[in-house]
Length: 216
Image (cartoon, rainbow, N blue to C red):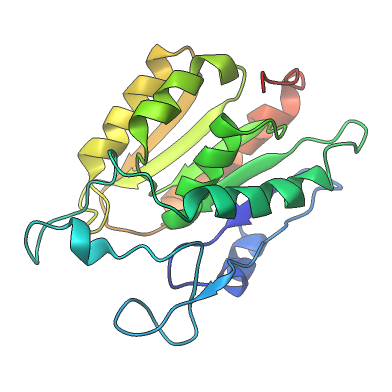
C-alpha cells in the first residue's frame, strides 16, 4: 500500500495509520516523501509538498474553498513520475497487489498516476482529494474501469469542496468504476470512521480476483 501525504505534511505522518489500517498477511506500507520543502506562509518550515499548491490564488475570498478542477499544475506530472518509479519496484512481485492512495494533495498525485500513466494499480484510495485537470482525467476514467476506488470526504471540508469530490465520485461511477464512497461529518481530515470503512474495502479487495493490467 503506497500512501502519499498531503501538502505541508511528511511521510512520517502516516506512521500512526500503519497501526490502524489493516493489510493482509505479508502486506507492507510504502510512504514516499514529497520532493519540495514548504516555507511560510505556504506551509510549515518542516513540511513537504509534491508541488507548490498556492491555494490562496484559487480562492475568491478568504473564506472560500478551492476549485482546482480546471487547473493543470506544472508540478503534478513530475510528482506523478516520481511515484510511478516507486510503484515500478513492486509491479513484478508475483501475486502482489498495489494499492495506491493519498490524502489531499497526495490524493491528487495518486489520481494522476492511476489514470494518466501505465503504472499498474490494483486499487485507488482517495482521502479528501479533489478534481485537478478534470477534462484530461475524465477522458481516461473508462480505460481504467477495472480499478476499484475508495473515496472519503468531509461534508464541512474548509479546504477542498465536498461538492467537487462528490462530482468526482459521480464521474468515476458513470465511467464504469466501482466506487466506495464514504462521506463524513467533518473537515479536512481522516477520522477513525473512515479508517474502519477503508479496512472493509481492503478486506474485500483481498477476496476478489486480481485486476488485469489496465490500458496505458
